[in-house]
Image 1: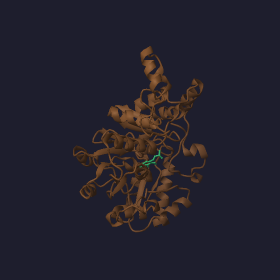
Image 2: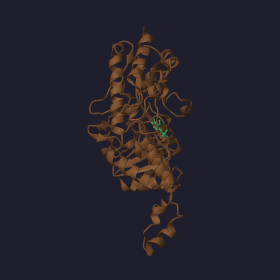
Image 3: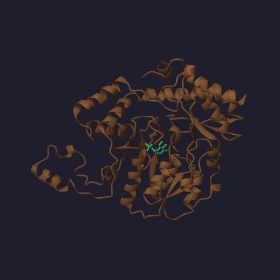
Image 4: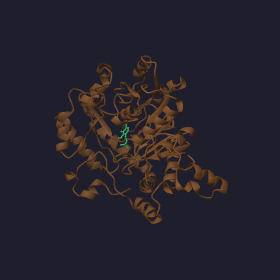
Length: 404
Ligand SMILES: Cc1ncc(COP(=O)(O)O)c(C=O)c1O
């Protein structure tokens, strides 16, 4: 593992305790150097290897890289819309607490988000609230459960709707290497989408990946990431070692476009960083779990009267992308300012339904009491692998200090 915050900055008491960090390991540097020496930047061997390994770990046959989790979600939604003939204005159920990208990709695809309230213990989509919402409209086509903060949404219960003909895209942009009753995230729906953005679990700067076991979905998404190009020629390697007849067909089709696609491609440089980090992901998750457990132990005395601490749902393993805290009796502002003034970084717990951008959508905020509570009183701090025991102690101490 690379150096810790303390090793990097010296005196632990002066460190900023960030929600995420990234340090280039010697192995990542070696893999990036291999790319630089290879003369190959566009989709090539490193990207293919990352797709193969990531799909294997996440229980899927295929994986398609893109330049962000948002791009992966965008092509996942577009692929299903095109292949299954969804109409403009059709609805897709999403949780009322998630990053705006989950809703935005729907609007970009001329679809409408149907917000569903979340569970007060895990903050993931509440399957009982989903059940009520699913009976309110007759043009719902799919559900996008979001595996928030590092653990799976209740896919066992949500999966019932898949058996009834609804499609499921798992927004797993905040969750990797985690399971739900033994099944990896990204393998339980039709498509799973992950993010490699800064402060995520694998960090390549920008980047995303979509997993699926359906070859038609994989081919459509790969085409959409590449301008909607005919799948016969996506990368320059596709013309290698072909018979004269095959080559003639490739040449005739390589500038043919089948969908209104995007330039959502990634380079071999990001793939090299991802591959390097994939070699040590188990250690990274172990450290995050340990940090989260330590924080929970240290904050337990406040859990009855002052704050709700995160819990792991039955059947889940947790990858702890961050450590969410929701105040029980007050808005978050006082505690958030107290922590930030002490160099402890915080972030909002993904408020969605109070965003000005969705003001024109038709929904009643009274349908979302849990999301409303989280929007007012929820925030998260880091529990990532570069934080030391001292850092974790400092977070707990600062929170205690606020309530004293
Ligand atoms: C739940 C969720 N969905 C989608 C995204 C978008 O990922 P990216 O930033 O890679 O586009 C994020 C990013 O943080 C996220 O948290």
